[in-house]
Length: 149
DNA sequence: GCCAACGTTGGC
DNA sequence: GCCAACGTTGGC
Image 1 (cartoon, rainbow, N blue to C red):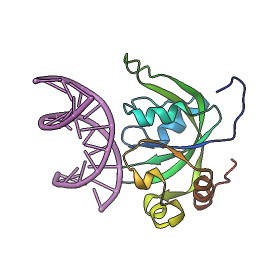
Image 2 (cartoon, rainbow, N blue to C red):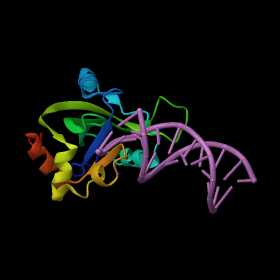
Image 3 (cartoon, chains in turn purple, blue, cyan):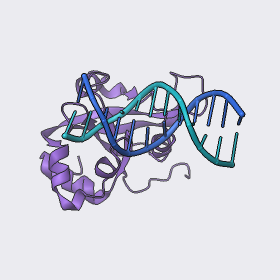
Image 4 (cartoon, helix red, strand yellow):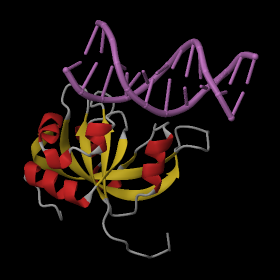
């Protein structure tokens, strides 16, 4: 990636067990954000390496809730994960932008054939995922959120 | 709380 | 470099 190049906005999805790291905790970090650490999976790491400053993402609660609950922004691009000395693992920082008007449940996503190709549906264990511009728009619609917010 | 799927680890 | 064992994840 060239320095200073502003590419098209990209979209992502971050999955978290609310008992480990919740949307409420993310919001409490404010604009400083927090590193999305602890990822020990190459595919998820590679996804994070593609993220650019200012990209947007969904914040998804797994476990009992299973719903997208908030919008986040990438506030630091991939850098070494400070929770390990293992140089293989990178992470980005994200900050909360806003909660969604209405949580979008996994059930609702699975029920929409336009979203059938999402990794969330196809590869449920991938903890950090890309989201297509179309899926972003559709889900923002369901969530009562302006896709450009 | 179970279990299937998956990904990483480590022995060979 | 293969593959079995193991640990983890996440939906149900």
